[in-house]
Image (cartoon, rainbow, N blue to C red):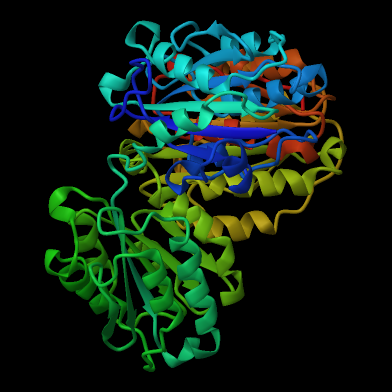
Length: 603
């Protein structure tokens, strides 16, 4: 089964006067695209299907979900589904699940993401337009009711033309004139039997999408301390640049090393092709040196590497990214130079390895969420995808992400520590760590606390216990299961409100900082939860619940700020399946009544 997506632009009109060109990509290898359509995957739009996830059926490949928050995505998305016998009733559930999986990870409403659906075979059938439904629940409900229209002939080319001409009109909900990206996702199970390649070629003409330009500079550790691991550093750089559209009018790349002083390896305007850049990276030799002066190197990057003379396009509003990698502690001050970079509009990421100071790495980074630390150079391979999630964001989404990272939150995780969670406690802990990864931990940004409960409540750490993400993650990693009975959730809710959200231990309710509580429960509470839940709501604390099949659904919905903020899994080992939807709630800045509708689903 082939899954394709097209970013529909306004530069080209397909045959028949329809509005829009696009870029096709595959949810997997490029060869199926070439076989069916005659085109290969587009790295610039690949993040859309990565975010979509996959359905564990025999025909749809699992695709990694990115860490970029999806509730800030603004898109018009139309599914174009093969309704013929090639899909058939056997595979239809997988197709429905795939689409629902995509929708469940997006903030569906008129000012964020709109969804449309159309079937095709020998003829076309519009299920609903972009403006037919304005919330996730209605869209999911309609997709769940999808039945195949039937047919034995696949007129894919005609269907693409029809979809481009009719599904992306202003009258049917398209917001193209407002600059909203238009996306077409094609799901088909058989070979096209008309001139599909002609339409695909028309769409391919708009492959250069406005806003695809990036200036990406690397500042890497060039001291003798990393000589034995230099190959890992080069591989790290290559993994980041391989998916990028490198070119004079696309992404430009520069690399510099630093020790006591910085040394440029090549500038942004030195090379024009990806092959040239990769050859240059592979051919790098270590500059050498005994210690790091990262502060002065950051100033060099700002004044020299990221200057117009050496290829920077900041004057043309091209996003500027700086990726700093260090294997040790800097001898000089990094804060002032990092602040000057940020003020000038550069978005820096910090990557610390081995003896790097995590606090320096965070100070270098745009914010703590843009800082990454690993123990060994061999672990660097876990970071490129996370960096690319930001570097490859469309400009309007990048702006959203950079703006939202100035927000503050008090976040408390109330974890079931009873016998009911003993077989899933490790999964709960990993889930909380993954949630924390998306936060900007700092006394002036996000603060986190963790509490376990059974008969009584035990605080693992308070909101003001730690001021760095690294310390929070390390502390979570040491938490051990309390064990015991009964499960007094009502008592725990009161304890959290009165003790953990208190100003004396870091609570910032008096400063109007949003306060979130995430409750994990593996069973029914032994006491009443209604009064404590109502008290939390009166205090403005937004509560979200994650319950297993042994938890009381009505109880979970009662505790949640609204019933829509209650999530369900069969057991805690399935927590990762709801992570994108739960994580999205962390970054909502609207009034609670305007929060995205979250579908509680049994997994």
